[in-house]
Image (cartoon, rainbow, N blue to C red; front, side, top):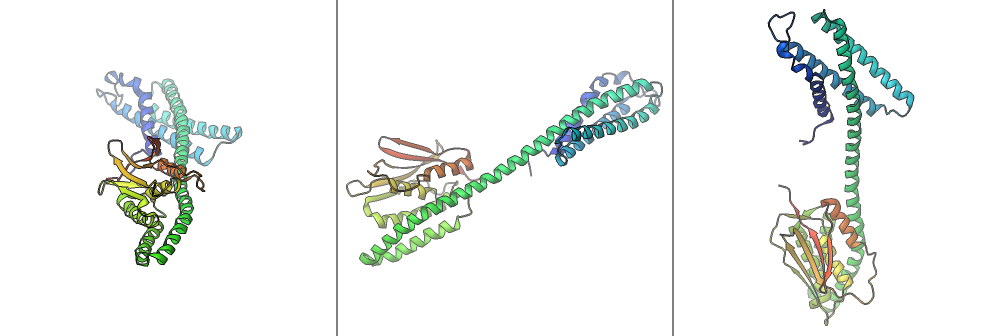
Length: 343
């Protein structure tokens, strides 16, 4: 169920308001007016019928001009003049029929009836023409917004695909090297490693078409990914998950993995300088924080340098907010806005 009004509903509301505005000066005359056909009865019935006519008249021309402008764009002066001519002819014919009917009720005032009817009708016709143009512009804007939203969703998916394609070759290359070492030196660990690697790859395939996943699923994937990194770096790397249990949050898939991979890629990891990656949440600030000691490598790591930029764009398109990156007191921190599940 749409919360906003349709264009036809807006046209109907506008027609009623225009008709009411046009007939507003006559309301004060109702207590003194009398119908010639019904002695002693206030002219309420005639006012209601006239109000209904002008409402229908305004609605017809609003919809007629909206239809015309939508399906017949006025690209030249001749087209515009022709369209206005058709409008004027319809206006004259419809008001003329109305005048004929009204004169049967008020035969003593033919000139006054004709003058007031055409004057009010012209005002309503002109306003209806402007409203029809406005609704046509509104329709174009709604179409444009819908198209922009579709393009945004395609952009999010394309960026996610590009990010996944960028990370997977590095990850697979390093994982296979680690697996080769385990087979030679610690064959008993090779089977658990293959199982976790399979879990990681399966998850990356399952979330290809998803924009958001429950945080619980993302953490299971991250735990498997952390296991693989631990097999590679041993005690030199610690990944600590202090996020709350089963919060009602959503997150773009593979986001935590990206931040962990980013920390591993750009920081020194050694016995002398182990690296600890900490995942926490700040409910008051509405963010998830991933932080690590800032100990950059002496030489920049090969890469495109677009990982965090891609993540920021994905988050911004999904939530309207940006990620926050800070480096204070020798600690590098990335903060992600918390996305709550819809009730």
